[in-house]
Length: 310
Image (cartoon, rainbow, N blue to C red):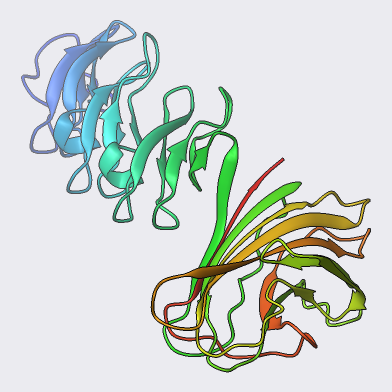
């Protein structure tokens, strides 16, 4: 008996197997076909039984949290993604994918879910207390903004928590301003106002006390809305200013104050005012001493509120 390598002779021999797991297959003659690798299976390839690696779940998935799906030609692995992402289908002929979910987008207390573009989630985070959610057009995310009523927007409020200087923070410039102040002086100084920290002699006043004759005060250090030098009385001041950049800032001020005594009677001063500045818009207001424009203290709970519109 003889044979050529692993080929069976044409007759006689019954086995030429050499390795555990060998099989016999037929090509042009009967032949030995050696055992394959661990995990391989026997399948037909090029018309012959062939050891092949088949992509089964256990051979494709490698990490805890993996997802198995059918790819373009075989099973495929989709690895674990970012915490709280969600699995989404991408349509016919496309592979699934992880994408942001509502839970993963919302990261701050008070966040609101919105859409920044088609099928893309975005968070709108809260801002200043009292602001409202406002539409900014079809192509821009909504945002939280100051309340606007009848075209007027609340720009800023300052309330003193203790005796001190009464002035606003810097606020957004608007072409027209309405200012409301309720202040109690901590000294006998009269009340006035400066804008944008301008302490120069750039303010004009034409004022009338209790509807009497007017007094003109030009090129002063502030706008004086209270020309009567009295002690600790409350003042309610209302001011309206045209705040256009290329013009002096003209306004009208009404100041009401409690008269001497406790009967609740009121005095009133009317003031036509001008801030001589054609380069800036008013974006900050400071209460000062009405005669010189020097700083004075106001009592706790005094406040100033500013509204504006274009």
